[in-house]
Length: 456
Ligand code: ADP
Image 1 (cartoon, helix red, strand yellow):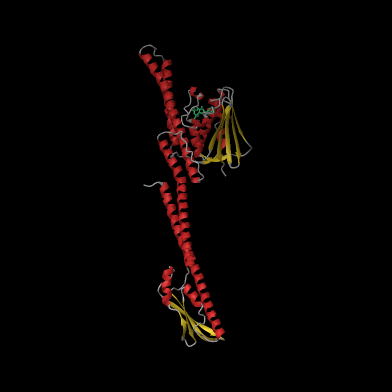
Image 2 (cartoon, rainbow, N blue to C red):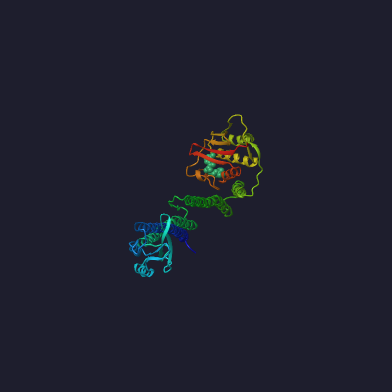
């Protein structure tokens, strides 16, 4: 097992190392090539200079003597090459001894390639377009280098190596820094998920980074923590809800039965009816939980057809009125324009949506209140607003009303309801690729805004 930091560092280091070695090799070879060309050029110029010097010497005297061009000998010794002069019949005029410079070379630590292999080159000397003699130039290397030349070459090599080492140091530091950029946030996210698994949902990852993927990772883990936190709250609330929903009637029944058994309360028809009502409420609660389970399973089968929404709501209107009239609540059903509002949907499930919303509106609106249902469209979207001027929802309850078994504080005093109506509404809308939003103000009313995709 290795850490991500180590792995990234090693990969970066190896890649950079290979790149630097290749660059160094390439630069070195190129410089060597250019330098060799330059030295060959210098050598050719030297040959030309020697030949023309000797031709001049011949021109001056009109013949060869053992002093012709003898001055060149000094430079030849100094520069490690051997000169031998011949006349036109190839008879020696004067010459140097190759052994004289062989020792010199070693003394001077000259860099001589193929040391010891003595090679010569012979050039013709002309006067008035006629060959009048020959000069033989011999040396112990194909290219002669002076001490400065060798120095130049080694210093170039040294600076290439130095720049390579320096680059490597910079790259090592950079790769350590870079790998830290990856490993630190990942470490933090890993630490955070361990904390999440221990139930510390309120924690937040605060990594600052400009790497998009890591920012996404941080955001998703924060969203996950938020969701888990919310779920945890819901779970706790659910437990206390169920506890409350079941314990209260259970206590009432137990106390009543005990009192009746002990003869404290007489067994009357009315008392038995009340106890029966409690048992029925109990059963309803369990039925609702069952219904919720059905909506949460993915296998739920829907029958999609083209449905005209206004017509669908209108068909429920009489039932709504029957309920609302008991509390003298008015219900207005209005649509914008003469358009038909067609969507693709399952009519039974959609009816369930509007029944739940309007029943809630009736339930949470005082006597003589007002409910309105509005249909309108914007672009390819159809909106249905179900609004009331009832008791409204507390701001702190708003984020939770669509959660299962969630009931606002005020509705807790209601006997009807178990906090699953809106959960079902939301599930049905999701299955229809729609959405639901809520706007509410305590004591002022509530508005649910449903959005559907219009059928083309
Ligand atoms: P319930 O069975 O309690 O009505 P719902 O899931 O239908 O369950 O609603 C959840 C909670 O949302 C309700 O308990 C209530 O607090 C709040 N609520 C829903 N609709 C309205 C409304 N029209 N006005 C005020 N509060 C509402």
